[in-house]
Image (cartoon, rainbow, N blue to C red; front, side, top):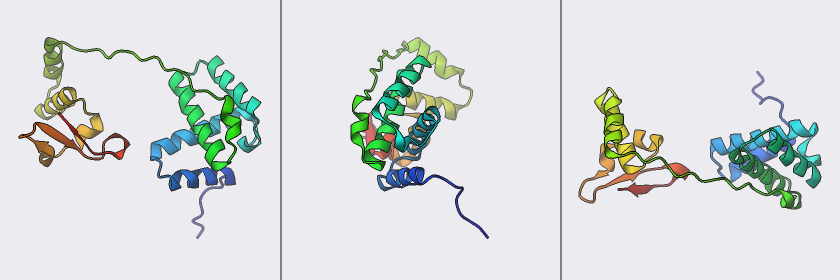
Length: 172
């Protein structure tokens, strides 16, 4: 019985191992692999044969394709990992600059709007989860993972375990 993995290149295998050694999150690993795959498709050959000019042209290609600043930066970070860590060629990334992402102010609802929003939700459990998320600024995954023991009513805090970045924190 053959239980071997599908045939992947040694470069990809090396990159996957480097990401595993650094304990990168699975979504981060997927994003980095996607960036390298996009670059390889554009290049038409293995990324380890690329030049700094190839990288520059690829960034221009992404801009011309209308890629958002966030997509551009995610791609650059993935390629940066490949060239600096997996290939040990950081000089190739010298001309690749991240793009400034415009920051928008969040929409802040007034008290009536928040009340109407929460009232639209039918189930009391969902209303509670939405109220907690809005009132504390927690992410969906953090609200879902809350337990009764995470509530400290004396200090008026919630303990968030393994939130974004696998970090523990307290929310007011």
